[in-house]
Image (cartoon, rainbow over all chains, first blue to last red; front, side, top):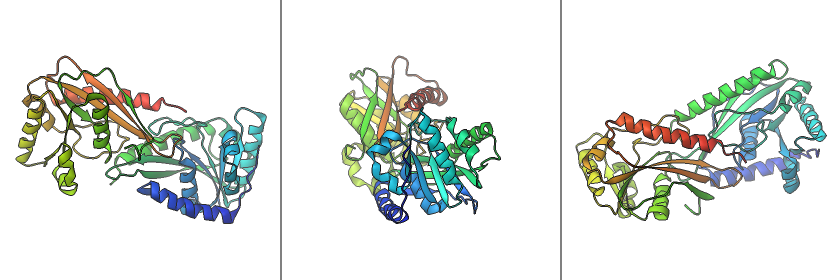
Length: 207
Length: 187
């Protein structure tokens, strides 16, 4: 596993660049109102459907959730995009012993209430239109190892066009409870319920 | 379309082009008309006509040179528009695109609703056109720009749907199967 060498200044600059860049490529990045619990670190589980997902997570972490971003990346992507390690990325090799190391590393990060760890629990790129979110079992192991208070948040990002040329991204956040308090099976169920809820909200979105 | 999309994928059966075509599509974005124009250009090569709202045609006036004609909801003019569309279908060189939902919806809806005027067109035209269903989904996947996937289905044989509900059911079936295919894509 390769750890992150997160740097606050670089992250801040990157965030400014990224905000400009997303502004160019999206008509709107809309974060639905959500208030994170103060004094808790955040485990952000999000749906993985596009190239932009990491940026969405970064955007939400800075803008709305106000935490220091860390993000779990696949090992080969991490090697290709080495510079992301300065922005909070750390690597994960699926199906190897090193994976356990990555999970322990994430858990340690989450013991600090200023941190946020983004994970794509699906473990692969899926369509934005799916109705079932698959959660890999590693998440359970991760949650068990967290020591400090940690809130689990599910972020569902949906991309829609409506009348504009450029796409609009809508982020729906849901509070899934605290790590250690919620059983894994229930967490899976909740995430899928929330996903369904997000799809419903999206259909009724004013535009 | 080429600049703003990574790729437009067309999933279609064999097309026959000896008849006029009535193309019904889901309406979720500004791009739908362009994507359908592209479909026509690539596969059918017909004369393109599209029914759009009168407000839109006022805002974007050059559309009318590209085959757009207007419809204003809730007025007597609507009947004129519907008859006009029906007449267009009598010429086998034409393609008429209609967004039967009548307004913009999210790309994530599960059920498709149609406006009733559609039956007037189908009834008004003399049964010699082909019906074509199109369902479009837009996704990014691993690229910066989105990929639009258009699922097409031709309806052959008996076009005389007794009422709008049967037509909706037929479209819905196509919509669901397309969505199913779309969600099975895993990279």
